[in-house]
Image (cartoon, rainbow, N blue to C red; front, side, top):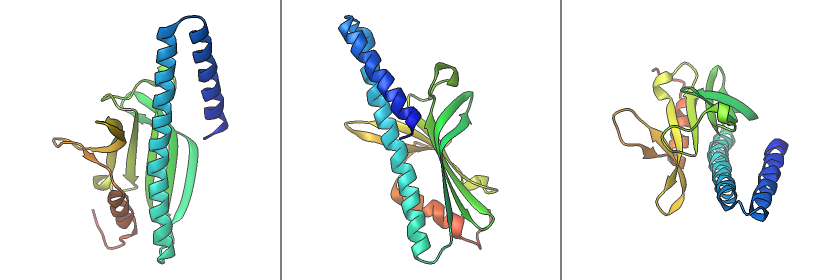
Length: 177
């Protein structure tokens, strides 16, 4: 968690405490929900970045030579909204895989369309047909899950095997798309 995120969490906690002590239960409940959702978002972002990083490190131990870079203050557009979060960049020669995940932080950033907690993209430089659009969503009775959004099909859960497949695409020199 960045220093800015830590400072933001402290400010929200203090605002919730003040709202409770002032009898503003409505504001207190909203801020508690916001804190809870932010924790779910952070956990979801960490899971996907850690999963891809782990699979890439495993590939490197098996002889690949992936370069791994992290950006903890990444901004990207989804429709008219701006997501703020993390970027993982994996490079294999001239081939590049980007994993970007985040959520709007301020009202002017917009909102997460589809009722989700966060959005993301898995993008292959120059291979648009392999790209995936992601939505972090609440699941019925369980932890939030990353869904792969696809046109004209039901959204599917993103799993570790999907990360392995995406990195396999990055490493596959013979593949043409």
